Image (cartoon, one colour):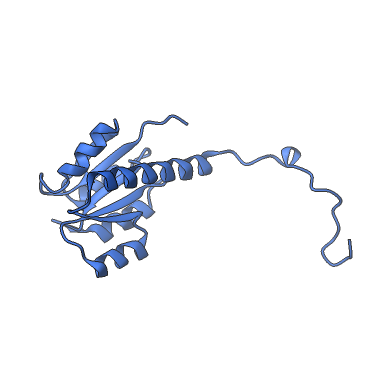
Length: 154
């Protein structure tokens, strides 16, 4: 599968996700942006949603938890990475419990960001490939040997 990875940046401040945008560009990842949850919902609910969503913790019409919820209901797997301006352990735990792929702070190093990006991209590509792979037909299924009813000795 050589599908081009795409990312949605959800934020209302141009400077907050700028380092993320720079790393995405170096990896030739297609970038789209949304300024609020409503705009992000349109992108995430599309037939071909972005592979990755980087979101600010707070948005004009919601929070990162709303974005995570939207991603859980996307038609194809989407990995959400929450980008916080400050390290916040409580919010980190809450985001991870709700299904975020990862949580980064503004102080995140570029090398760490590239590592997270690579793993998030690989993970979502594998998830999408797994759900799009056709199931084998019964005739194609491997034979495991003699079939014995479960209640009789082999």
